[in-house]
Length: 120
Image (cartoon, rainbow, N blue to C red; front, side):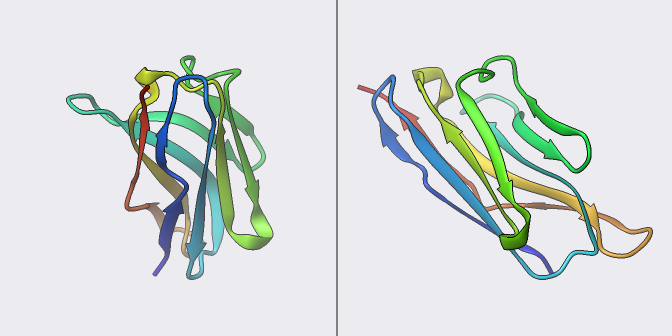
């Protein structure tokens, strides 16, 4: 069973930076994508950034140019560097992993969520 553990959230002033980390434990046959989602109070969960194996990165328009997703496949880890943070970036951030546990069975996993608050 794959488990995702996140770290790095917290309180930061507008214009500041934070780096989120996600580490996956357990075994997965083939990774399809690693990503970050966020959910603000009263809003739906939305994709922030993702890395698809063989297809590169994707970003929400609202964060493109400010956030950077990266990964370390050897460590089963991925990261979200968030710069020039805005109050509207405040949310619970979830890491996400999609892949196959065998040749045909697709699975999706979520982290427990980490709070990011951007406020002066």
